[in-house]
Image (cartoon, rainbow, N blue to C red; front, side):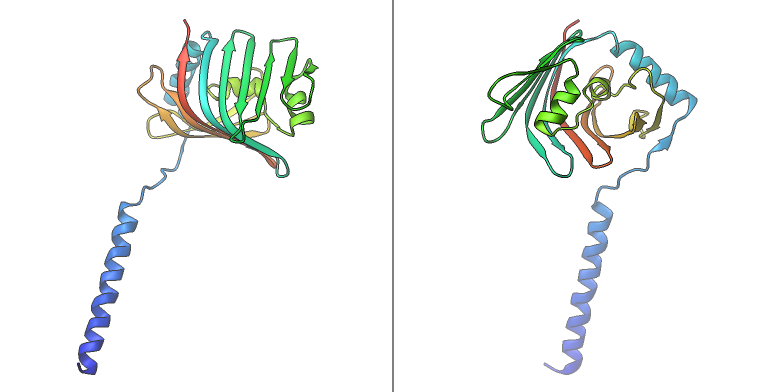
Length: 210
């Protein structure tokens, strides 16, 4: 085989590689840039909130992860909300179970120390004894795609008019996916971050009691 033949083969292989790379780029999913809030999007959000806020009896199951840059945890989460009462249970891959039960006045943390720990502030319990910074009060709104009451929130929206990001109370919440077949739609993947703190939920199922 002559030099010109080898050059032609190298050129052919190079062109194939370029074509394959272009094809992969064309087929790769593109993340659409969120859109700023419009009056129409905010009105639709207000309608979702008006429908979902009164529905305070629900259960979600999710893959859960939390980290503060030093400590963290992950596992299967079952979160039952019964009005002001809640049961927030994380089952780690190693079999460890951490459970936070409570209501508006009292919280009990089980599975971190030998005895149950009690406090009036569930977020403080998780932060001081488990090393988890979980904004539980606001998160019960954010996981449903709702703004938490009492604090200004900034929203952007996706192509379907659903929240893409939310900034509230020093946290940024990203909505990576939605259960669009629900009425109204409900979040599927929720990432919340603040400084070094991260909370991630990949929600497997939702159920509501009327």
